[in-house]
Image (cartoon, each protein chain N blue to C red):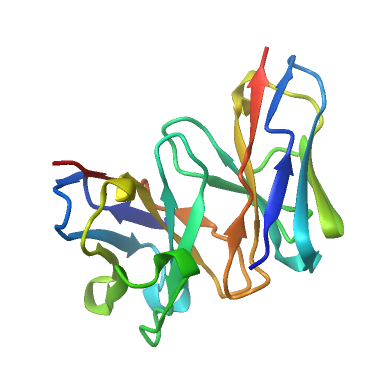
Length: 108
Length: 119
């Protein structure tokens, strides 16, 4: 099983600041098979990024993904209040998918 | 538009069984795999497995073998999750989520079904 470790656990930033979220895999993951999801309280998760760097339809361009191999990053370039949420990475390279444990982004 | 609509909250006693439904609309049901994801209270997402909507063949994550059963009724474009011999630790929100193929992300999610196990 591929284990995904996200850091930090919580990120507390002000509106307009840049957020950098990390996702590290226990073994190499093809960048075609890494996604990021956003989950707000009381809501289902929402797909933000797939194939490591491709934004899903309707996702604001302040969200960007990068990385390869075992290290991936989600960047939110200019935080807005509505970006307060938990963000999860997921690998789907193997027929057994796994999620990271999540990073909570708090807006001051 | 694509929608995955799940059944309502359930309150069950330990040892009982529960069946959660996920009705799909707005797309051809058997062209997308259906996945199930668990989220315990205050915890992260756990991928439980998926079912091939063409063949009905299920694949379970290791932690979800034995008491968890995925099934389909393609005539009504609905996927099901049954949990047998319920335990208190099964208390969680359960989500269905489709994916275009095995090697694709979950692009649409159901709203979630809360299963509470309590005596």
